Image (tube, rainbow, N blue to C red; front, side, top):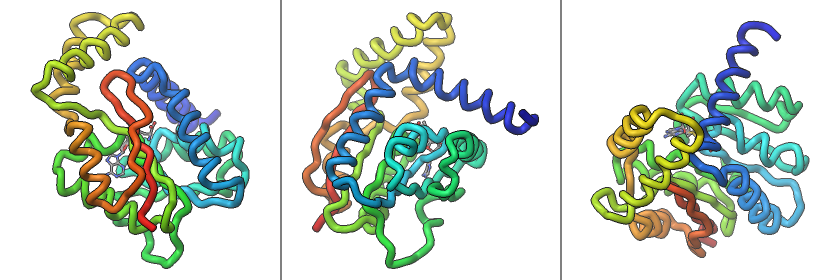
Length: 233
Ligand SMILES: C[S@@+](CC[C@H](N)C(=O)[O-])C[C@H]1O[C@@H](n2cnc3c(N)ncnc32)[C@H](O)[C@@H]1O
């Protein structure tokens, strides 16, 4: 392995380990979304839009078992996209994967619409509610009518006891994995300060405003929730 590949392999390993501590049901989440997409897409060729594709786990979870799916992945982090490209190459998926550096605004304007889209663990990094709505609206605009869309995001009322309790649960995942109490406390404070939380009602309202229908919460683990929906007909 050359230096660049070693670096990407190390970063990838670190990201994957941390993701699975933060979200113990991380692999089950991707498996559930795959099932939903498979049934909705009915076994045919399908183009998937992956917002926040850095890390490459949508590609590794869904690519090998679904040879008729192609992926357009978008991410604002060049470093994370290198991990995604590294994983795609390792699994020989490169012919079905197109990675774009930037926001969804970098998607070429074309009449070609996607068959499905995911936005996993991205929305809480966008601080402004109008920007979140704009992203969801733009995803909807790039989807075929009735196409499935899955959103996964941190959620909760920042001042509520309910979110405080979920933060305690989240903290326990890291403590149980062997992290020092002081560094876990620091991470909890940082998560509260740096992630942009919206209540589940507010997230569902944004999805509706963005034009999605059949909005169904299917997933919760620790700080995170997942919603399935379909683009308007
Ligand atoms: C926690 S990672 C999630 C990666 C992957 N979806 C997963 O579930 O493993 C969040 C990713 O979203 C990217 N990101 C943040 N804001 C974004 C935006 N506005 N558009 C596209 N990607 C974004 C980050 O660079 C990062 O790679």
